[in-house]
Image: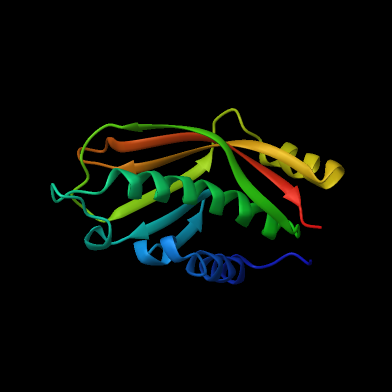
Length: 155
């Protein structure tokens, strides 16, 4: 696969997300990708719990999907076809969310995209650590996910 432009790759990513019934029900939309960060958004109304705030499962899903989407996007932009999976993750709920979901993922501080992509090109598999956050109030995160994502070359 040849390298793609960001808008084309984001469009394909949205199509993949829309093909998954649970994700479609959450109404998750790819917002943007800039400065190494990928953002997904979803309306609170489709992800609300009995207390009137964001359902914890929806927050977990949106944060996990933002990490998955980031890794998938970076591989597509580098011209690779891959299957991406979450290998493990840790999620912290820090405050209730009374606004739309806004999951923002980026590589963890210790992660290196060049190493990840080179390893993938050489071995057909690689893993990378990602962090994703849901903003809260006063500039603080309402939820944080740290996870490792693994990619395998499509056969």
